[in-house]
Structures are given as structure tokens and as C-alpha cells.
Image (cartoon, rainbow, N blue to C red; front, side, top):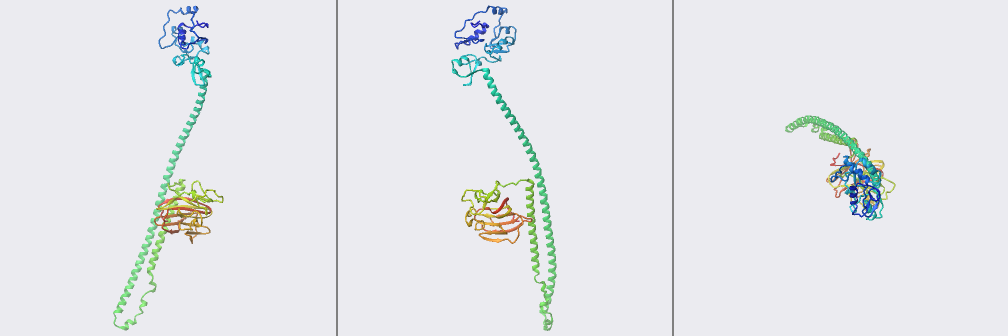
Length: 508
């Protein structure tokens, strides 16, 4: 029994006091009374008599901790370890310890050394909130944590558990959100796969139908060529037959004339009709008929070519409409905002130029057109054969064409078509083409709002076509190009949209 009146097993209290020798402060495991000298132990006769009822007291096995002798005798396994008392206890003997708030219980497997202060060798009972460390009572009184705010381990543990629960809740929420995103991603991927499969089927059907249409077109064109070939063959047979007849007639006349030339009787010769009567004036110019027939055949062939190009254009439009996309090439024609005048609006996709009364307040640079509402393409053509299509909208006054990058950006010489560095098709009250201030008015009426511009750089040809059915040629400029060519647009009002671009342009 200690001086404070609390009783303990002699072996248990000796061991407890032994662990406190190094700190110099001895604490009653039950009431926490402090002794600055190792307390002397007084024998409790009553308790000793109870213990002596047991004939023998087995020695605790090494490594199993300290046990209540009653628990050992009754072979009841220890279920809790009292850190305060440094003993393992069964349920029956645990009741007194569990009622005391000073007694900290833990799992029997807990290593006692891990629960002691490494400096003072005392049980870790407190938590220093400033240093985030578990400490013993000596650490809080005389150690490095003296004066710090401390909490009981259970209280600090519950606070940390609260924070951990909040973190767990947030992590749970994030996990659920991530799980939902994964599910959404998988669902989107599934729909994307289904759409890709559907699109592939539609494209396959589309191109199957396109091939069928092309086969039908080929058959129609070949049939038309055969028909015209048959007509020419019949014409040739007819002409050959007529020529044979004419040849026989001419041969007879020649023989008659030869006979007259061989006669010696003047009277007979003079009595023959005049030589002029022997020739049929209506027969003259027969060769011209053949030439006319040849020319007629050439015109029909031109019409066939126009039909083919019109059908192909319709196919491209058909494919574009059914696919619902326009697949740009790596060097597609886009408008260069850096060259656009301040009264020109350029769309976000850089394909539409629109005249605007409101100036855009763009900075004045050496690239920008200052006096005319013009804009150039960002890419240029310096070889090969290419085309680009445009469509006008609104009551538009416009011109489209091509020019060198060295064209002036201000002054009269900056107007497209008014210099030797640009070529254009212009629409105002009528249509005209212009280069180097030389204008040629077109004698035809253009009904379509779509125009194609074709350039063959090496051949030095720049052509304009109306995209109607069939495609109609408007004009071709011939020049020797010395610089790269940029697409050019000028607007008086309305807008111009670039529909597409292609290489290896075949002349319609």
C-alpha cells in the first residue's frame, strides 16, 4: 500500500515504480499523487490473507506483460491493457480501472515501450498542440514542452478523428464525383463508339451511292459519246457516198473534156455547150459543210465536259451535305485579319468577310489596307493548279480575285484590279473583269451567287467560272506570274464567304 492509501500487487507496483526511477518523480497509478522520493510500501494484511489463499503464484511468462494473479489462476485471458497500471486485465478486474478517467486502456498487444516517453520513460498521456507531439507529464512540467497548450490524448484523438472524418467525407464526396465522372466518361465513350459506328455505316452507304452515281454518269457519258460517234460515222458515210458520186460525175466530165481536146474538127468543138455549164455552182463550198460538221461535234463534246463537271460538283455538294462537315486541308484558304481594312468584319473561322459601317479600330500597319475595304488570304500559291469557291450574300458590291503580296496597301494603286499586280472579277451594276486598270465588261448575265476562281501558276492562267448547272466559263487572264498569288476580296457592301479550296483544278 502507498502512502496515499491505494493498494496494489507488490510485483505490479514495484515494476511501475521501477519505470519511474529515471524521471525522479513517482506517481500513484490510481490517484496520480506525486512523490519525489520512491515511496516505501506498507503491507496490507487483509489483502495478503486473501492472496495467500492461492497455493502458488505462477511467474508471468516473458513477453506477455504483467497480469492480475486472479486472472492467471482462473486461466482467464487478458482482454485489456491498463497503461496507467501497466497491467493486463480480464473483464472482471477491468471494471475498477475502466471507471477511472486516468486509466488509459488499450489492446493487450500494444507494446508498452511505444507508449512511453523516450526521454522520461513515462506513459504518454498528453498531446502538445503546438508541436503536434504526444508527451508525458514530465514533458509538460519540466521538458521542452513546458508552458505549451496540451490536451488529453483522448480529447486530442477525438479532435483529430473529427478532422479525419471531415477529410473522409470530402474524400468520399470526391470519390463519388470521380466515380460519376468515370461513369459519364464511359457513357460518352460508349455513345461516341455508337456514333462512330453509325457514321461509318452512313459514310459507307454514301460512298456506295456515290460510286453508283458515278458509274451511271460514266455510262451516260460513254453512251452519249457513242451516240455522237455513230452520228459522225453516219455523216461520214453519207459524205463519202456523195463524194463518190461527185467523183464519178467529175470523171465523166473530165473524159468528155479530154475527148473534146483530142478532136480535130473545130465545128464539133464549138457546137458543144460552154465549159462553164459543165460545172454545178451549187457544188462549190462542199468542203465547208464537212468543217461545219466537225465544229458541231466539238461543241457537243464541250457540253459533255460541262455536264461531267456539273455532276461532279453536285456529288461533292451531296457528300458535304450528308456528312455535315467540311474537311479542311492543311493549307485551307483563310482570311488574314492583319490585312483587313477597318470596315471589314472577319468571321471567327476566318472564312467570311462582311462590310461594316462601324470601323474596327485595328492598328495601322504596313500589311493593312487603308483606303479600300479589302482583305487578302493568309496562304499563297506559288506553283501548281488550284481553285477556290466563294458565295456572295446581300445586295453585294464586290470583287474577288488574286494579287501579289507586294501590292500597295494605300492609295489608288492599292485597289485590286487597278494595277499590274492584281486580277479580279467585279460586280457592281454589271459584271466585269479587270487588270492593270483595263476593264472588260462581260456580255453575259450571271444568275448564281457562287463563283469559282482557278489558277494554273506554271501556265500563267487565272480563270473565273460561274457555279451554275452546268458550270460556265466567264473569263481567263493570261500572264507570267512572278510572285506568289494571294486570294483577294473587296466589298462595297454585303459579304463574301469562302466555301472551299482544292488542288489540281481541272478546267470545267
